[in-house]
Image (cartoon, rainbow, N blue to C red):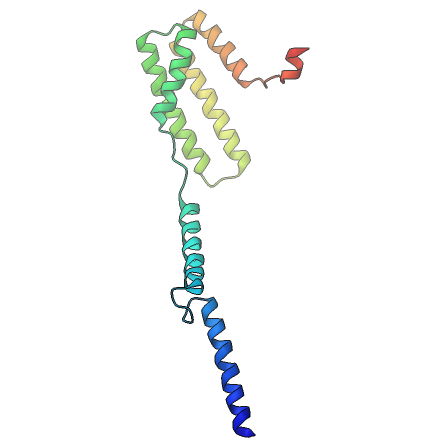
Amino acid sequence: MKLLQSIFIILVVFLFSTTVSAQYGNGGYNNGYGNNYGSNRRMNSGMDQSMSQQKPKEIPVEVTVAKIIERIKPELNLDELQAIAISNILTENIRTQGMLIKAEVSQDDKMANIKALSEATDRKIMELLNKEQKEKYTALNQEANSPKKSKKKKSE
């Protein structure tokens, strides 16, 4: 009777160990369901980590400045010298803003620094413009800073 009990216990232990190892791909079915499932899970978690570590591509400062100049040049009737000077000022501004945003200071300090930088940039740009261009530039800034009205108000 003891022989039968010991054979039964060995058989049960063997069956359970095979089932458990098959679920994790460490034996059992080898290249079957268990191995693919376990390795697939490991591969996905590795891919998730690599995807989360990638940063979105940053748009180069020069591209941003070129778009701004392209938009304001006809509106302000800028000549080439003014356009180049303003693009240099804007390039410096955007790079400085990037450094301010990445700085480890409080949100209020960041906002105050960015506001001061924006005012300084506006002063530098205004020095390059004539009277008519200054008025147009001021109007463009006010338009850009004012909140947009919703479509419902426009249709009424």
